[in-house]
Image (cartoon, rainbow, N blue to C red; front, side, top):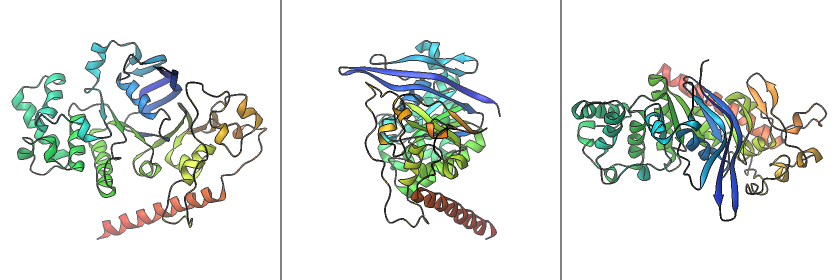
Length: 357
């Protein structure tokens, strides 16, 4: 499958009074045409900073891209000036932010906010841009779009505001859509609707999506591949099946163990002990070592490379070294993995019954 984006050894630093925070510490991944890549990890792992770097939205000062490449359409986006980047931002790469109320201008009608990008990037006249804005509102499932285009953000519910934000992001038919926890502020039923909407729109537009989330439950339904981030690095990457049914990194085991499933048989969730490291002074060796129940001496001395598990699956843990002891995921995590399989079977059965009726 054709690569539309390549990120190579990306490093992003923020200068603070306490010192320089190494928020992203050498991230590597690619994005293929028409696929959804989910980036998961707990707060502070560097997920949002990575996507903001892709958009050229790292505030300087205090932040800066220290080194690395972001290759898109034959250009390294890290080398572009802000004026050049503004032509790509919104037209070729768009972003859906976490909270729709802070993403929308409360003093502007939603129609004008959708039309703004069309007029700037697509050089449309006002009449044509308005017509397209109505089409976009209809596309994202907002009823009575001709009337609602004249309304303000406060006149929409949370779920409807998020649909407006998606319409703005899709206005210029971007090649890449960055979704930064777009369902966090929504209740569960609206969450499901927005996720289903994004999957449907991707099929219609053939856009590539990078989906940022801390919720692995969301990932299972929307992603083709998953990158697990910890302390500013990707520690495991693979297909959804690789990550859910054959995880290799102890941090991924911890994330899976903290998820409820329909059929895990567990009375309580499993917490990952400890806290993420201080990225002003990153630890020597594996950053996860202080929280890793399977820690070895080498974890505190040397940073693990990305070991190849399969053609689609890589993980940065010394447990994959040929001389390391053979360690299996905890029994509770294995039961959860079986629970995910059971949940998937139930979902497929439910969908099949719906199709038959």
